[in-house]
Image 1 (tube, rainbow, N blue to C red):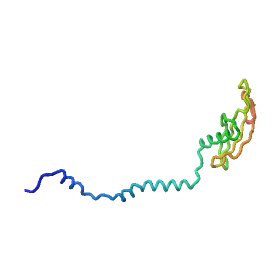
Image 2 (cartoon, helix red, strand yellow; image 1 turned 90 degrees about the horizontal axis):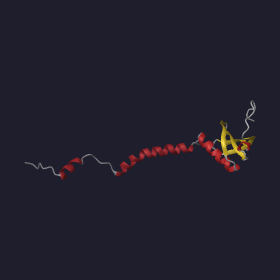
Image 3 (tube, rainbow, N blue to C red; image 1 turned 45 degrees about the vertical axis):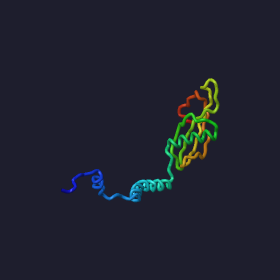
Image 4 (tube, one colour; image 1 turned 135 degrees about the horizontal axis):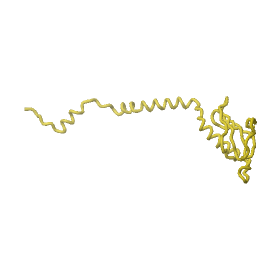
Length: 139
């Protein structure tokens, strides 16, 4: 009779029959998806990424506040222009008591296509409690 005892040693040697990949081969295969992603990212990084509207609004308000020292209370208009964006920002220029007598102002703010503030100007000044006259067109 032949040796019919299956020892753990003999069973282990029987199971290791499929060829194993070398560490270099495994490493190459595991890096392929990462290399493809890096390639896509580097290709995308060469093309200028246009900021999203909410990024533009946040950055414009922050840049405006830094330049003027006035905090934007609201953005009353926002539109894409030829070379960026145009915003109208409402700010508190002079605080008075009662609050309805405080002086507010609207500023036209221009942002370039990369999201950098390129200019601003005051277009209107008004008391907080005053409503615009009908047909005034906002100015």
